[in-house]
Image (cartoon, rainbow over all chains, first blue to last red):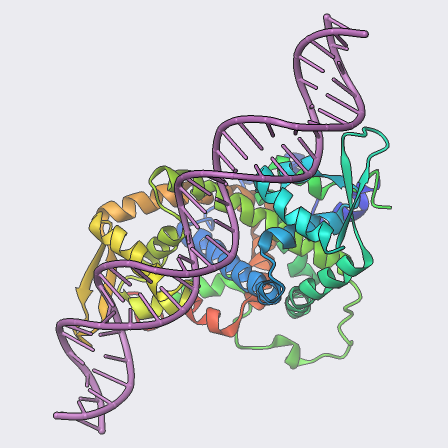
Length: 184
Length: 184
DNA sequence: AATTTTATGTCAATAAGCTTGTACTATACG
DNA sequence: CGTATAGTACAAGCTTATTGACATAAAATT
Protein backbone atom coordinates (compact mmCIF):
# COMPACT_ATOMS: atom_id res chain seq x y z
CA UNK A 1 0.00 0.00 0.00
CA UNK A 2 3.01 2.19 0.22
CA UNK A 3 2.98 2.42 -3.53
CA UNK A 4 1.09 5.64 -3.40
CA UNK A 5 4.06 7.26 -1.77
CA UNK A 6 6.19 6.90 -4.81
CA UNK A 7 3.49 7.42 -7.33
CA UNK A 8 2.34 10.50 -5.59
CA UNK A 9 5.19 12.30 -7.18
CA UNK A 10 4.52 11.03 -10.58
CA UNK A 11 1.21 12.28 -11.68
CA UNK A 12 -2.40 12.42 -10.79
CA UNK A 13 -2.43 8.69 -10.28
CA UNK A 14 -2.38 6.21 -13.12
CA UNK A 15 -5.80 4.68 -12.99
CA UNK A 16 -7.93 7.69 -12.48
CA UNK A 17 -8.88 9.81 -15.41
CA UNK A 18 -9.24 13.27 -14.15
CA UNK A 19 -10.87 14.22 -17.42
CA UNK A 20 -13.82 12.21 -16.30
CA UNK A 21 -14.49 14.64 -13.51
CA UNK A 22 -16.01 17.01 -15.95
CA UNK A 23 -15.24 17.74 -19.53
CA UNK A 24 -17.30 20.65 -20.75
CA UNK A 25 -14.76 21.57 -23.35
CA UNK A 26 -13.89 18.70 -25.70
CA UNK A 27 -10.31 18.84 -24.40
CA UNK A 28 -8.65 20.63 -27.25
CA UNK A 29 -6.11 18.25 -28.70
CA UNK A 30 -5.15 20.29 -31.71
CA UNK A 31 -1.68 20.77 -30.35
CA UNK A 32 -1.00 17.07 -30.78
CA UNK A 33 0.38 17.19 -34.28
CA UNK A 34 2.93 15.11 -36.12
CA UNK A 35 5.42 17.84 -35.38
CA UNK A 36 4.92 17.71 -31.65
CA UNK A 37 5.09 13.95 -31.74
CA UNK A 38 8.30 13.98 -33.73
CA UNK A 39 9.59 16.43 -31.21
CA UNK A 40 8.91 14.03 -28.38
CA UNK A 41 10.37 11.11 -30.24
CA UNK A 42 13.54 12.96 -31.06
CA UNK A 43 14.13 14.47 -27.68
CA UNK A 44 13.53 11.11 -26.15
CA UNK A 45 15.86 9.42 -28.55
CA UNK A 46 18.77 11.73 -27.93
CA UNK A 47 18.29 11.76 -24.21
CA UNK A 48 18.43 8.01 -24.31
CA UNK A 49 21.57 8.01 -26.38
CA UNK A 50 23.29 10.34 -23.98
CA UNK A 51 22.11 8.44 -20.95
CA UNK A 52 23.32 5.19 -22.44
CA UNK A 53 26.66 6.68 -23.39
CA UNK A 54 27.18 7.77 -19.82
CA UNK A 55 27.28 4.20 -18.65
CA UNK A 56 28.56 2.46 -21.74
CA UNK A 57 31.99 3.91 -21.54
CA UNK A 58 32.66 2.51 -18.10
CA UNK A 59 30.82 -0.67 -18.89
CA UNK A 60 33.02 -1.60 -21.79
CA UNK A 61 36.14 -0.87 -19.77
CA UNK A 62 35.06 -3.62 -17.43
CA UNK A 63 34.20 -5.97 -20.23
CA UNK A 64 30.55 -5.70 -19.44
CA UNK A 65 27.68 -5.00 -21.77
CA UNK A 66 24.27 -3.53 -21.34
CA UNK A 67 22.84 -6.80 -20.23
CA UNK A 68 25.13 -6.77 -17.22
CA UNK A 69 24.10 -3.25 -16.48
CA UNK A 70 20.44 -4.08 -16.63
CA UNK A 71 20.84 -7.07 -14.41
CA UNK A 72 22.73 -5.02 -11.87
CA UNK A 73 20.07 -2.38 -12.11
CA UNK A 74 17.14 -4.64 -11.52
CA UNK A 75 18.80 -6.63 -8.81
CA UNK A 76 19.90 -3.52 -7.04
CA UNK A 77 16.50 -1.92 -7.29
CA UNK A 78 14.53 -5.06 -6.61
CA UNK A 79 16.51 -7.06 -4.11
CA UNK A 80 15.36 -10.63 -4.00
CA UNK A 81 14.12 -10.66 -7.58
CA UNK A 82 14.15 -14.08 -9.15
CA UNK A 83 15.66 -15.09 -12.44
CA UNK A 84 12.25 -15.65 -13.93
CA UNK A 85 11.06 -12.22 -12.98
CA UNK A 86 14.07 -10.69 -14.63
CA UNK A 87 13.38 -12.60 -17.77
CA UNK A 88 9.87 -11.27 -17.98
CA UNK A 89 10.82 -7.66 -17.37
CA UNK A 90 14.10 -7.37 -19.20
CA UNK A 91 14.07 -7.98 -22.90
CA UNK A 92 16.64 -10.65 -22.89
CA UNK A 93 16.70 -14.30 -23.63
CA UNK A 94 17.15 -17.00 -21.10
CA UNK A 95 20.67 -17.69 -22.15
CA UNK A 96 21.53 -14.08 -22.14
CA UNK A 97 20.56 -13.49 -18.57
CA UNK A 98 22.24 -16.70 -17.59
CA UNK A 99 25.55 -15.73 -19.07
CA UNK A 100 25.56 -12.23 -17.71
CA UNK A 101 24.29 -13.30 -14.35
CA UNK A 102 26.84 -16.06 -14.13
CA UNK A 103 29.66 -13.64 -14.73
CA UNK A 104 28.36 -11.20 -12.19
CA UNK A 105 27.96 -13.93 -9.60
CA UNK A 106 31.43 -15.28 -10.28
CA UNK A 107 32.89 -11.84 -9.84
CA UNK A 108 31.11 -11.50 -6.54
CA UNK A 109 28.89 -8.64 -7.59
CA UNK A 110 25.66 -10.54 -7.22
CA UNK A 111 24.65 -13.20 -4.75
CA UNK A 112 22.14 -15.98 -5.23
CA UNK A 113 20.12 -17.43 -2.42
CA UNK A 114 17.59 -20.18 -2.66
CA UNK A 115 14.15 -18.81 -2.01
CA UNK A 116 12.63 -20.11 1.16
CA UNK A 117 9.16 -19.96 -0.29
CA UNK A 118 9.86 -21.93 -3.40
CA UNK A 119 13.19 -23.63 -3.29
CA UNK A 120 13.41 -23.94 -7.04
CA UNK A 121 13.82 -20.22 -7.30
CA UNK A 122 17.01 -18.30 -6.73
CA UNK A 123 16.66 -14.87 -5.29
CA UNK A 124 19.21 -12.35 -6.40
CA UNK A 125 20.92 -9.77 -4.28
CA UNK A 126 23.59 -7.27 -5.07
CA UNK A 127 26.70 -7.40 -2.93
CA UNK A 128 28.47 -4.41 -1.45
CA UNK A 129 31.03 -4.58 -4.18
CA UNK A 130 28.29 -4.87 -6.78
CA UNK A 131 26.51 -1.86 -5.41
CA UNK A 132 29.73 0.08 -5.51
CA UNK A 133 30.20 -0.68 -9.18
CA UNK A 134 26.58 0.03 -9.88
CA UNK A 135 26.79 3.40 -8.18
CA UNK A 136 29.75 4.18 -10.36
CA UNK A 137 27.73 3.32 -13.43
CA UNK A 138 24.75 5.43 -12.50
CA UNK A 139 26.84 8.30 -11.27
CA UNK A 140 27.06 10.07 -14.59
CA UNK A 141 23.47 9.36 -15.41
CA UNK A 142 22.45 10.84 -12.11
CA UNK A 143 24.53 13.90 -12.77
CA UNK A 144 22.83 14.29 -16.10
CA UNK A 145 19.39 13.84 -14.64
CA UNK A 146 20.05 16.05 -11.70
CA UNK A 147 21.29 18.77 -14.00
CA UNK A 148 18.18 18.47 -16.13
CA UNK A 149 15.85 18.40 -13.16
CA UNK A 150 17.26 21.48 -11.58
CA UNK A 151 17.41 23.33 -14.86
CA UNK A 152 13.86 22.45 -15.78
CA UNK A 153 12.29 22.81 -12.38
CA UNK A 154 9.99 20.64 -10.35
CA UNK A 155 6.85 21.45 -12.28
CA UNK A 156 8.43 20.39 -15.53
CA UNK A 157 9.73 17.24 -13.94
CA UNK A 158 6.26 16.29 -12.84
CA UNK A 159 5.10 16.69 -16.39
CA UNK A 160 8.05 14.64 -17.53
CA UNK A 161 7.05 11.78 -15.25
CA UNK A 162 3.44 12.06 -16.17
CA UNK A 163 3.98 11.80 -19.89
CA UNK A 164 6.41 8.93 -19.55
CA UNK A 165 4.06 7.11 -17.27
CA UNK A 166 1.33 7.23 -19.86
CA UNK A 167 3.71 6.05 -22.50
CA UNK A 168 4.50 2.82 -20.74
CA UNK A 169 2.70 -0.48 -21.13
CA UNK A 170 0.68 -1.77 -18.25
CA UNK A 171 2.84 -4.84 -18.04
CA UNK A 172 5.92 -2.74 -17.48
CA UNK A 173 4.21 -0.46 -15.05
CA UNK A 174 3.89 -3.35 -12.71
CA UNK A 175 7.53 -3.35 -11.92
CA UNK A 176 7.54 0.39 -11.44
CA UNK A 177 4.75 0.04 -8.95
CA UNK A 178 6.57 -2.66 -7.01
CA UNK A 179 7.86 -2.08 -3.53
CA UNK A 180 4.44 -1.98 -2.02
CA UNK A 181 5.36 -5.12 -0.18
CA UNK A 182 9.11 -5.32 -0.30
CA UNK A 183 11.24 -2.23 -0.73
CA UNK A 184 12.68 -3.11 2.69
CA UNK B 1 11.64 29.14 -40.89
CA UNK B 2 9.33 26.59 -39.48
CA UNK B 3 11.84 25.82 -36.82
CA UNK B 4 10.79 28.57 -34.49
CA UNK B 5 7.32 27.20 -34.48
CA UNK B 6 8.49 23.88 -33.27
CA UNK B 7 10.90 25.12 -30.69
CA UNK B 8 8.37 27.47 -29.37
CA UNK B 9 6.50 24.57 -27.94
CA UNK B 10 9.46 22.99 -26.39
CA UNK B 11 10.61 25.15 -23.56
CA UNK B 12 11.74 28.56 -22.58
CA UNK B 13 14.27 28.53 -25.36
CA UNK B 14 17.44 26.51 -25.21
CA UNK B 15 20.13 29.09 -24.83
CA UNK B 16 18.57 31.41 -22.32
CA UNK B 17 18.81 30.71 -18.63
CA UNK B 18 15.74 32.19 -17.11
CA UNK B 19 17.16 31.55 -13.66
CA UNK B 20 19.55 34.36 -14.35
CA UNK B 21 16.69 36.80 -14.34
CA UNK B 22 16.51 36.84 -10.59
CA UNK B 23 17.03 34.16 -8.00
CA UNK B 24 16.19 35.54 -4.57
CA UNK B 25 15.35 32.15 -3.15
CA UNK B 26 18.17 29.61 -3.49
CA UNK B 27 15.88 27.52 -5.69
CA UNK B 28 15.00 24.70 -3.35
CA UNK B 29 16.41 21.54 -4.86
CA UNK B 30 15.71 19.20 -1.99
CA UNK B 31 13.24 17.29 -4.12
CA UNK B 32 16.07 16.11 -6.33
CA UNK B 33 16.87 12.90 -4.49
CA UNK B 34 18.24 9.56 -5.58
CA UNK B 35 14.67 8.31 -5.55
CA UNK B 36 13.39 10.95 -7.92
CA UNK B 37 16.34 10.37 -10.16
CA UNK B 38 15.81 6.64 -10.20
CA UNK B 39 12.22 7.39 -10.99
CA UNK B 40 13.21 9.36 -14.05
CA UNK B 41 15.72 6.80 -15.15
CA UNK B 42 13.25 3.97 -14.86
CA UNK B 43 10.34 5.68 -16.52
CA UNK B 44 12.61 6.74 -19.29
CA UNK B 45 14.01 3.28 -19.68
CA UNK B 46 10.67 1.56 -19.99
CA UNK B 47 9.25 4.18 -22.28
CA UNK B 48 12.22 3.65 -24.51
CA UNK B 49 11.80 -0.09 -24.43
CA UNK B 50 8.17 0.20 -25.41
CA UNK B 51 8.85 2.74 -28.09
CA UNK B 52 11.58 0.57 -29.55
CA UNK B 53 9.40 -2.51 -29.46
CA UNK B 54 6.76 -0.70 -31.44
CA UNK B 55 9.06 -0.43 -34.40
CA UNK B 56 11.25 -3.46 -33.90
CA UNK B 57 8.55 -5.95 -34.62
CA UNK B 58 7.88 -4.59 -38.07
CA UNK B 59 11.54 -3.91 -38.67
CA UNK B 60 12.62 -7.48 -38.20
CA UNK B 61 9.86 -8.71 -40.46
CA UNK B 62 11.47 -6.73 -43.23
CA UNK B 63 14.92 -7.92 -42.37
CA UNK B 64 15.92 -4.51 -41.18
CA UNK B 65 17.59 -3.51 -37.97
CA UNK B 66 17.67 -0.40 -35.91
CA UNK B 67 20.38 1.08 -38.01
CA UNK B 68 18.07 1.03 -41.00
CA UNK B 69 15.38 2.66 -38.96
CA UNK B 70 17.66 5.40 -37.78
CA UNK B 71 18.88 6.09 -41.24
CA UNK B 72 15.34 6.30 -42.54
CA UNK B 73 14.47 8.55 -39.66
CA UNK B 74 17.25 11.00 -40.16
CA UNK B 75 16.95 11.09 -43.90
CA UNK B 76 13.24 11.59 -43.69
CA UNK B 77 13.52 14.31 -41.10
CA UNK B 78 16.54 15.98 -42.62
CA UNK B 79 16.19 15.67 -46.34
CA UNK B 80 19.46 16.33 -48.08
CA UNK B 81 21.56 15.17 -45.15
CA UNK B 82 24.96 13.87 -46.18
CA UNK B 83 26.54 10.61 -45.19
CA UNK B 84 29.10 12.40 -43.08
CA UNK B 85 26.47 14.29 -41.16
CA UNK B 86 24.69 11.06 -40.38
CA UNK B 87 27.89 9.57 -39.10
CA UNK B 88 28.40 12.36 -36.66
CA UNK B 89 24.87 12.28 -35.32
CA UNK B 90 24.09 8.62 -35.29
CA UNK B 91 26.21 6.41 -33.13
CA UNK B 92 27.27 4.12 -35.86
CA UNK B 93 30.46 3.39 -37.65
CA UNK B 94 31.24 4.31 -41.16
CA UNK B 95 30.85 0.77 -42.35
CA UNK B 96 27.65 0.35 -40.52
CA UNK B 97 25.94 3.25 -42.15
CA UNK B 98 27.31 2.16 -45.46
CA UNK B 99 25.82 -1.27 -45.27
CA UNK B 100 22.42 -0.13 -44.11
CA UNK B 101 22.33 2.76 -46.47
CA UNK B 102 23.35 0.58 -49.38
CA UNK B 103 20.50 -1.79 -48.71
CA UNK B 104 18.00 0.99 -48.42
CA UNK B 105 19.19 2.56 -51.64
CA UNK B 106 19.10 -0.75 -53.46
CA UNK B 107 15.56 -1.30 -52.31
CA UNK B 108 14.58 2.07 -53.61
CA UNK B 109 13.71 3.55 -50.24
CA UNK B 110 16.43 6.15 -50.25
CA UNK B 111 17.86 8.16 -53.06
CA UNK B 112 21.32 9.61 -53.38
CA UNK B 113 22.08 12.75 -55.29
CA UNK B 114 25.40 14.37 -55.74
CA UNK B 115 25.54 17.62 -53.89
CA UNK B 116 25.84 20.59 -56.16
CA UNK B 117 27.91 22.46 -53.64
CA UNK B 118 30.51 19.81 -53.09
CA UNK B 119 30.29 17.05 -55.60
CA UNK B 120 32.09 14.61 -53.36
CA UNK B 121 29.11 14.57 -51.09
CA UNK B 122 25.97 12.58 -51.62
CA UNK B 123 22.80 14.08 -50.34
CA UNK B 124 20.22 11.62 -49.15
CA UNK B 125 16.51 11.79 -49.74
CA UNK B 126 13.76 9.42 -48.86
CA UNK B 127 11.61 8.17 -51.72
CA UNK B 128 7.86 7.94 -51.68
CA UNK B 129 8.10 4.26 -51.02
CA UNK B 130 10.61 4.86 -48.28
CA UNK B 131 8.39 7.40 -46.64
CA UNK B 132 5.54 4.97 -46.77
CA UNK B 133 7.54 2.35 -44.95
CA UNK B 134 8.82 4.90 -42.51
CA UNK B 135 5.32 6.08 -41.73
CA UNK B 136 4.39 2.50 -41.05
CA UNK B 137 7.27 2.21 -38.63
CA UNK B 138 6.45 5.35 -36.74
CA UNK B 139 2.75 4.72 -36.74
CA UNK B 140 2.68 2.75 -33.52
CA UNK B 141 5.13 5.04 -31.85
CA UNK B 142 2.96 7.97 -32.76
CA UNK B 143 -0.06 6.24 -31.39
CA UNK B 144 1.78 5.65 -28.17
CA UNK B 145 2.98 9.21 -27.96
CA UNK B 146 -0.32 10.66 -28.91
CA UNK B 147 -2.03 8.59 -26.25
CA UNK B 148 0.45 9.76 -23.65
CA UNK B 149 0.22 13.37 -24.71
CA UNK B 150 -3.50 13.53 -24.54
CA UNK B 151 -3.63 11.63 -21.28
CA UNK B 152 -1.02 13.82 -19.66
CA UNK B 153 -2.11 17.15 -21.07
CA UNK B 154 -0.29 19.96 -22.75
CA UNK B 155 1.27 21.39 -19.61
CA UNK B 156 2.83 18.07 -18.72
CA UNK B 157 4.09 17.67 -22.24
CA UNK B 158 5.85 20.99 -22.05
CA UNK B 159 7.56 19.83 -18.90
CA UNK B 160 8.42 16.60 -20.63
CA UNK B 161 10.14 18.46 -23.44
CA UNK B 162 11.85 20.80 -21.13
CA UNK B 163 13.42 18.12 -18.99
CA UNK B 164 14.54 16.11 -21.98
CA UNK B 165 16.00 19.14 -23.58
CA UNK B 166 18.18 19.80 -20.58
CA UNK B 167 19.25 16.20 -20.53
CA UNK B 168 20.71 16.32 -23.99
CA UNK B 169 24.27 17.18 -24.91
CA UNK B 170 24.92 20.38 -26.75
CA UNK B 171 26.35 18.48 -29.67
CA UNK B 172 23.14 16.57 -30.11
CA UNK B 173 20.99 19.61 -29.65
CA UNK B 174 22.42 20.97 -32.84
CA UNK B 175 20.50 18.54 -34.93
CA UNK B 176 17.33 19.22 -32.98
CA UNK B 177 17.76 22.88 -33.70
CA UNK B 178 18.40 22.30 -37.37
CA UNK B 179 16.08 23.66 -39.98
CA UNK B 180 16.85 27.25 -39.20
CA UNK B 181 18.64 27.38 -42.50
CA UNK B 182 17.50 24.37 -44.43
CA UNK B 183 14.22 22.59 -43.75
CA UNK B 184 13.24 23.72 -47.22
C1' DA C 1 4.23 -42.63 -4.64
C1' DA C 2 4.44 -41.77 -9.51
C1' DT C 3 4.01 -38.28 -13.00
C1' DT C 4 4.07 -33.79 -14.75
C1' DT C 5 5.26 -29.06 -14.61
C1' DT C 6 8.10 -25.27 -13.36
C1' DA C 7 12.47 -22.78 -12.37
C1' DT C 8 17.01 -22.67 -13.24
C1' DG C 9 21.45 -23.75 -15.11
C1' DT C 10 24.78 -25.60 -18.87
C1' DC C 11 26.55 -26.78 -23.44
C1' DA C 12 27.10 -26.33 -28.07
C1' DA C 13 26.13 -24.52 -32.58
C1' DT C 14 24.54 -20.88 -35.31
C1' DA C 15 23.41 -16.50 -36.64
C1' DA C 16 23.78 -11.44 -36.35
C1' DG C 17 26.03 -7.38 -35.69
C1' DC C 18 29.78 -4.43 -35.21
C1' DT C 19 34.58 -3.00 -35.77
C1' DT C 20 38.85 -2.54 -38.23
C1' DG C 21 41.80 -2.34 -41.84
C1' DT C 22 42.87 -1.84 -46.49
C1' DA C 23 41.92 -0.14 -51.23
C1' DC C 24 40.10 2.71 -54.58
C1' DT C 25 37.51 6.68 -56.84
C1' DA C 26 36.08 11.32 -57.24
C1' DT C 27 36.52 15.99 -55.73
C1' DA C 28 38.14 19.90 -53.46
C1' DC C 29 41.66 23.09 -52.17
C1' DG C 30 46.15 25.37 -52.26
C1' DC D 1 50.41 19.32 -59.32
C1' DG D 2 49.96 17.17 -54.31
C1' DT D 3 47.41 16.47 -50.33
C1' DA D 4 43.09 16.12 -47.84
C1' DT D 5 38.20 14.91 -47.82
C1' DA D 6 33.79 12.21 -48.89
C1' DG D 7 32.17 8.21 -50.12
C1' DT D 8 32.14 3.19 -51.65
C1' DA D 9 33.51 -1.67 -51.32
C1' DC D 10 35.37 -5.98 -49.43
C1' DA D 11 36.69 -9.03 -45.91
C1' DA D 12 38.72 -10.86 -41.76
C1' DG D 13 37.94 -10.98 -36.71
C1' DC D 14 35.33 -10.39 -32.67
C1' DT D 15 31.55 -9.98 -29.63
C1' DT D 16 26.61 -10.92 -28.85
C1' DA D 17 22.39 -12.88 -29.36
C1' DT D 18 19.46 -16.70 -30.42
C1' DT D 19 18.24 -21.65 -30.40
C1' DG D 20 17.83 -26.25 -29.12
C1' DA D 21 18.88 -30.03 -26.43
C1' DC D 22 19.62 -31.55 -21.78
C1' DA D 23 20.14 -32.00 -16.74
C1' DT D 24 18.44 -31.01 -11.92
C1' DA D 25 15.71 -30.02 -8.24
C1' DA D 26 11.59 -29.05 -6.27
C1' DA D 27 6.81 -28.06 -6.45
C1' DA D 28 2.18 -29.58 -8.10
C1' DT D 29 -0.94 -33.04 -9.49
C1' DT D 30 -3.18 -37.18 -9.75
